[in-house]
Amino acid sequence: MNAKQLAKYIADGGADAVFSRLYGADCIDAQRARYITAASNFESLYGNDLEVRVFSVPGRSEICGNHTDHNHGRVIAASVDLDVIAVAAASNDDIARIKSEGFPEDVVNLKEYTEPDKSMYFTSAAIIAGMADGLRTQQINVRGLRAYTTSNVYKGSGLSSSAAFEVLVGTMFSDFYGGGSLSPVMNAKLSQRAENLYFGKPCGLMDQTACAVGGFITIDFADPASPVIEKLPFDLTEAGYALCIVNTGGNHADLNEDYASVPAEMKAVAAYFGKEVLRDCSEAGVTAKIPELREKVGDRAVMRALHFFEENRRVGAAADALRSGDVGEFLAQIRASGESSFKYLQNVYTTKNVKEQGLSLALMLTERCLSGPITGHDVSAWRVHGGGFAGTIQAFVPASLVDAYKAALDAAFGDGACRVLHVRNDGAFRLV
Image (cartoon, rainbow, N blue to C red; front, side, top):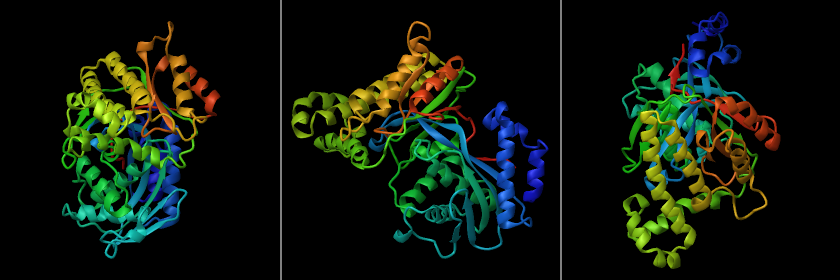
């Protein structure tokens, strides 16, 4: 169908079943309107002569494994019901034209832009070229496309809007030119490759994998070239919980040094033992050398290293709990992860500006809302979200407490600060 026919198909309820699957039955009307608008915008840009397809890729949340991946540790992540969507069509040329809502159209000549170009670093055009190049390495002969995209994975939320876009581009190219043969894991690896080589950012693989695979996943980065990825069979909504992300409105400016200090200090401990990363060291060995390490790398580095070992164990225990459906044990591990991040990893606020502690305040208010004799400390969990120092926290909130929790956190941080999300079981997805 063309864009106009797609809009009518959606308006007539043709996509209602898949909207219910991806977003929940109470969101069908809103998603109809959203997708119809996207189809209409595609028509305005590219006309009605092209056969269109519709794609969705979710954002992601880190669940457990705070600051472990860069030292080849273990993580749990999950996709959420915020996503980037595209109405797209193949074209008979080698030009990729992608218009993302709120941004200028990217026009990329895929025959000319076939290798990394430093002058194009940190642009979406670089991602598009990098994904096309990556698919060629998988013997998929990529050609041009036309696409209109829109996203509700808000930037600065720690939900990985950039990774979702990368995976979306890979999904579209694969669907049009590879018969959809690109596996979710390979799509994630090519997305990381594009971001590393073409975009110029040395990211890990967790974000892209969670967006591509969907649901709860655990990843072991012991061999970062071939990480072990497992999808965990657990439905958070069915268990009676929502995942709440609270944006505290913190300022991310001048935090690069804080973020960089975490892997640097962990690796400094590893270097003391002649290793590059902590995964190649033993916890007993680090503990035995604490007096020497305190003098060599400092107390905080020692605590961050010990957090790494403990957090790796927590990921394993939380994954086991999800496999067995033990919600109470899962929540206990998440609370322990948050406590360790605050006390030992120390990534909840920057020491450059101790007056601004939005994350600390949000965590305190969350504990006040969700613990105590009525709600019960063991039926919910909360922790810093993502890299930390500013930005967002996450909380696993029983459905019966969501409205009260959202009201309390919105009152402190502003209307809409608390976003009520659900874990989406589908990753990269072609709807139509």
